[in-house]
Each structure stands twice: as C-alpha cells, then as structure tokens.
Amino acid sequence: MWEVIYEYCPRHKTTLCSDVSCQRVVLMRPNGANPANKLHVRSPLPFSRLAGLMLLALGLGGITGPMVPEIRMETAYILRQIQNSKQEARIQTLPKSAPVVFEPLLDADGNTITPVNTDFSLVIPKIGVNAPVIANVDPASPSAYREALVNGVAHASTSFTPDQDGTVYLFSHSTNYEWFVKDLNAVFYLVKNLEKEDTIVLFYKGTRYAYHITDKQVVAARKSNFLIPDAGRRSLILQTCWPPGSTSERLLIFADLVDSQGIQI
Image (cartoon, rainbow, N blue to C red):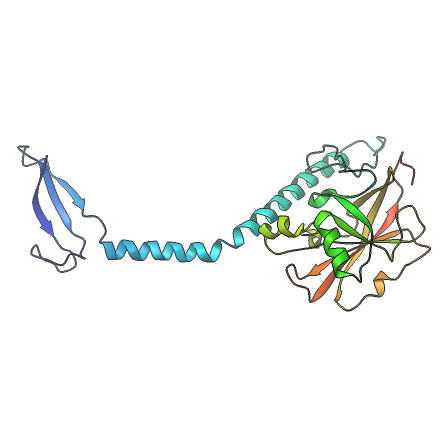
C-alpha cells in the first residue's frame, strides 16, 4: 500500500487546490517505508483534457480516413514500378551479344501473367489489369454499356476487333476511391499512370496482340469522333472518365500494334 505525503498544484502554485480539472504533482511512499523512499508521480489527465484529445484524434481520423484506400493503391503501384525498374536494370546489364526476348506478359516480380481468358481479354502489366472484354457493346446505349461494364471492359461496336485492320476501342469505369473499384468494376482506375512505350496486351480468339502506348489525351465528354471506325491502322484506344470519379471529361490512351516475337499477329 502507498500513502500520499504531499500534493502540489503547479497551475495554482499551492497545496490546497480543490479544482478537479487540475493536474497535480503527488509525492508518495509505501506504508511503513523509510521516509527517504519516495516516489514522484503525476495524477492522471483530467477528464476534460482527455476528452479533448479524443475528439482531436477522431477529427484527424475523419480527415485522413477517406484518403487511406487511394494512398494504399498508389503505394502498391509505386512498388510495382520500383520492381519493374529493377527488372529492367537486370536486362540492361546483360552482354550485348545476349538476345533480349520481348515478353509482354510479365508482372513486377518477373512472373508470367495468365490472362483471364484467351477469347477476348485485356492485360496491362504495369497497373495490374487482367480483365475480360465484352465484345460489340453499343457506346450510345447506356443500358447496354452499363451492363457490360459490370462484367468487364466494354468493346465499342463501332470499332474493329484486334484481328482486323483498324482501331480497337475499349472503355471502362474509373473512380477516385478504392471501395468503388469493386462496386463499379473500375478496371481503368490506374490508367492515368500509363506512359509512352508502356505495353498493353489483348487476347482475341486465342491470339495475343501486343501494343505500345504512343500518346494520351484528355478530351471533352461530348467529343465522340474517336469512336468513328479508323480503318487501315492496327491500333488501340482506351477510354475512361476524367478526373477519376467525374464524368466531365474523358482520358484517352492511344497505342499501336507491335511485333511480338514468336506470336502470330
């Protein structure tokens, strides 16, 4: 057992303070112990001060909480980028005589990516996209493309397929919050991070088609001329809403078909 031998209120500079909100310095010692064996302790925080700190913590949590999912996804993307850089550095250190085989289906760890299907699917290794493509969706019919986007990426019926001599046009949802990624099937959440020369892969009827990005543009939502069939050029356009979570504009990613060693295209 301990006994209090001295209390002092630093706020009021007295030992006679009766204010319950004050924090006191207390001098204690065990019962029957040597008077020299003393222990200085501070009394617990007053309830009013403790409640204030709790409200402050809750306020900060309310501000930073909605940002956590987006930070987590962006961090995962950055980590993939670091791993990609390490992989590229290993390739660059090979002797000049060593042939470098073009292999577009490798993740950040160098593992081979297996597409969800080979009938019609989209793989973007840099941002972790591996999704089915719903063919021949009418881009002018909200009911048609909304249903398609629940199940995968939509292929505009006004465009070509990968095996034809023309532009393939694909579109999907984007969002600014992770919890909507699953609800909206927002496959194109991270296409904003794609850059020139990044690789996009399409599978169609058992054949693999690899594309390299050439450009990206932000255009007005009403600008629909890109949906007009573009014959004579083997290319690809990806479309999503911009900014993420908004429908005011559209982000377009342009890519051209490239040769893939050992793959018939």
